[in-house]
Length: 119
Image 1 (cartoon, rainbow, N blue to C red):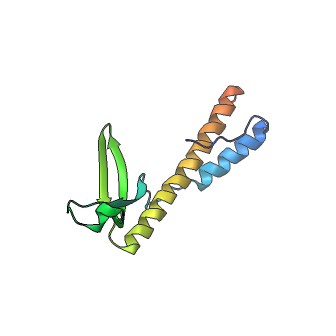
Image 2: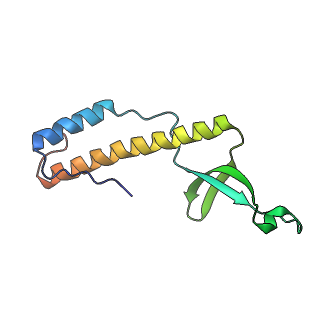
């Protein structure tokens, strides 16, 4: 869900300055990944395994990405370095998306006020 920026009380000049600052500082991170980091505990198929008594195997860490309707990409993160890199990449996506969302909401508010988006 997108963060809501309270913009109606801001002056038009303030919005235009904030927009200019956002655009000038907006850089697409090269490590950006739109995905989720999932920790999972699993049971195996062995009848007498301790996982059947509540002591599940894991935790296993996965990168999970929805690619298309009904299509999910999932792979196991094996090393601590991979896990940290995935966390940083997901965070980079989140930060970038938040900046884009603020820019979108500023543009919407400027349009609502009858201002040009090219100013």
